[in-house]
Structures are given as C-alpha cells and as structure tokens.
Amino acid sequence: MKRLIYRNLRTTYDLRPHLFFSLLLPTLIYIFIISLAYNKIVKPIPMYGKYLSYSAFFVPAAILINTLQFSVLCGSMLWTDKYNGMLEQILSFSSRGKYFLSRVLSIVIISSSTATVLGLLSTPIIIDEIAFSYATPFLFLYAVVMSSMIFSSLSFCVSAVVKTPDKLTMFNRIITTPIIAVSGIFYPPEYLPPLISEIAKFNPLTYAAELIRASFLGVQINTLQHITALGFFVAVMMGVAYTLFKRMDVT
Image 1: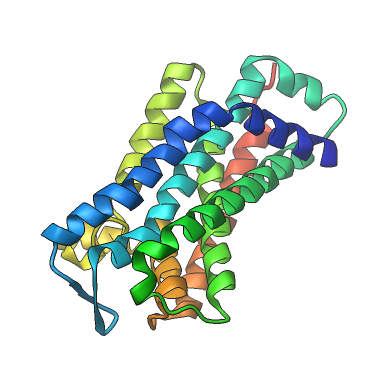
Image 2 (image 1 turned 30 degrees about the vertical axis):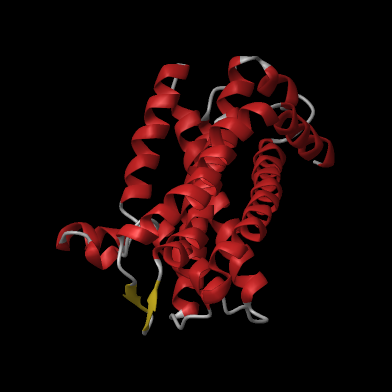
C-alpha cells in the first residue's frame, strides 16, 4: 500500500500549478482580501458569548473550503484511473480495499498539510482574537481530517456511478455548492431561514467549521457532540463509498 500512497502523492504533486491556481489561490483571496473587506461592512457578530469580527468568524472555517474542494478533486481521481485504464492494472496486483484506503490516506496527508499552512498564514489577521490552547492542534486536525475523509468519500461515490467526465464535474458541483452554502462558514447557521437552518444541522461542514473556530478562538462549544457527529458522518460516507467501489466495473 506504500507504493500506492506514494503514487497518489506523486500524482498530486505533479498537479501543483493547477492546485495552486484553482484551489489555494481562491482560498487565500477569501482570507486576505474578502474577509478584511467585510470587516468594514459587517458589524461584529455575537457568537459564543462574545463579539467576533467577521475575519475571526470566517477565516478559521474558510480553511475548510480548500479542504472540501481538494478532497473532492482527489476523490475524482478514482474516475480518472478507471478512464485511463490504470485502475484495472492496479487491481491486478492490489486489492480494492488497499486502493481505497491508499486514496483516503493520501488525501488526508495532503489536506492536513495544506490546512496547517493556511492556518499558520492566516493567524496574523486575527491574532488579537486568537486564544490557542493545548487542544488546538487536536481539534484543528480532527476537523480537517474528518472533513477530508467525508468529502473524498462523497467524491468516490460520484466517481463510482457516473460514466462521463462532464457528469462527474456536474455532480461534484451540484453536491459541493449547497454543502458550502448551507453551513456555518460564511455566516452563522442561525441567520439562515428556519428550514435551511435546520438542514444545516445535518451538514458535516457545519460541525467541522465550529470545531475549527473552537480551536482558534478558544470558544466554548459541545466538543464531544461535534467530534461524535463528524465520526458518524465519516463511518457512513466511507461505508457507502466502499460499497459502491466494490460494485464498480473497472473494465
């Protein structure tokens, strides 16, 4: 499986110009330009028993946008391997379980590394409102790792059933856009219309966003509930994704 992980990491590394301009650069623009501009427009947000600037509210969770998009893109490489005939070759010397696990682990490694860099880069923007603790690294990495596993599994599900690249792109966008919109990244979920606010409670990104804010800002949330919810989403999504992958025709 080490060979498969190395192959996946190497493939991703070869795509670094595309990944930078399509994924990293937009996130940096969100963090360093848009969030600072909105500080002048949006009044401090009353949350967690304090008033947060828009940057303090948005920046920690914005890292998850990159995690989601990157996980979906890398999950789509399952379809690319099948389309190019590589999947059939790989499965001639490795099992489906090892291939699936190697993909997930590769995505986790790169997502965690990228998120850590973005977190360090964005810290100066909200330095006055940050309250790090011993739990910060754990909560931060847990939210990122669980999110990458959830959304890569979601992309695996799409890759396992679609037949053309156009449909792959279409379904990935149809799925990811509402997930980002109906979450707590750009605005507090309770500010949404009542029905949408209830739907946000079933969105894993909502829990991940609050967990990352807790890690940066030291705010009090029901940490155990958020950790458990993300673990539940991971178990369900990975189970569904692997079931579809096992039934997938690789020829």
